[in-house]
Image (cartoon, rainbow, N blue to C red; front, side, top):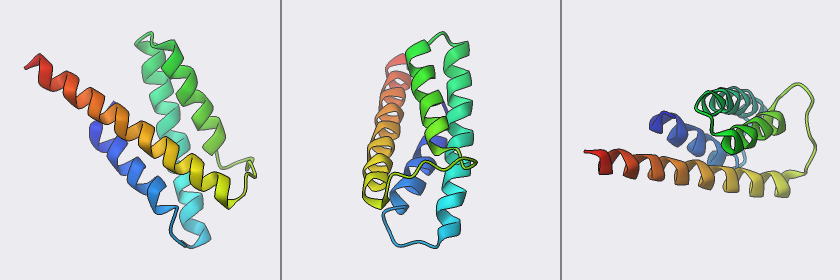
Amino acid sequence: MPLILNLLLAVLLLLCLADMPYGYYTLVRYVSAFVFAYYAYVCFKAERVGLAFTFGALALLFQPFYKIVLGRTVWNVVDVVVAAGLLYLMVKSFNKNVDKK
C-alpha cells in the first residue's frame, strides 16, 4: 500500500473534525470508499484475507451512495480511529521497508 496514500487519506479524515462544508465530507466519502476498495483488492490478491475484509468493510461504511447515519460525534470517532489505523499501517510498512535495507 502506498505510504503517501495512507498519509493523505489520514489527513483528509482528520480534517473532518473541523467545521467543513458539506461537499468536503462527500468528497471524503468518495475518496475513502475508492481507496479502501482498492486496498481490499490488493490485500485479497496478497492473501491477507483479514485485512482485505477490514478494508472491504471500511469501503462499505464510507461509500457515498447509501449514507449510513451515525451522527457527527460517532463519525468523528470513526474518522480518528481509521486515520490512526492508516498511520499505524504506514509506520509498520515503513519500518518493514527500512529493515529490508
